[in-house]
Image (cartoon, rainbow, N blue to C red):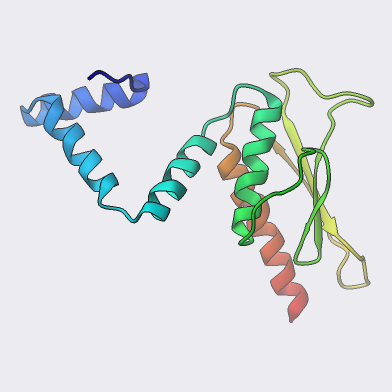
Amino acid sequence: MSANVSEPIANELVAFAERHGVKLSPIIDLALRKFFAMEPGEQERALARYLTDKPGKSRDAWRRSFWRVFTEEFGTVDAIDNPFAPRTFEGYVTVCLLNNVGGDGEEHEPIYVWVGPQVATETRNESRQFQFARQSSPAAAAEAVSNWVKKMAARDAQ
């Protein structure tokens, strides 16, 4: 059996093995034993999170990963196929924006996410636009946006 790992992980693995004077296989075996000791649902969540932590091969892939993690933060699954369709949670609308009128940005351009109240009132009127580098983690972006939504919803509930 053979497997490929990313270069950063390979570098860490080799450095650790050299520091401790051990071969690679016991370290890999230990890591896999820890993974297989997890409950099946926990394994699936960990793997899904790992896969969504990567920037994705395209802007659309980045957005799909963003929405997957964002909706999971609110205890649900994203059933909307359109990455530009708004999603509403806890009274706040979240939407990925197009970079240009009539089209998306170039692969290297940032990704914009806007959040605002579904119904604005005198006390519920704050909106925010987030900007994420295209190579950033969509999972981390989703967590940042969902944390802001939860913070605003908690403030509104007071």
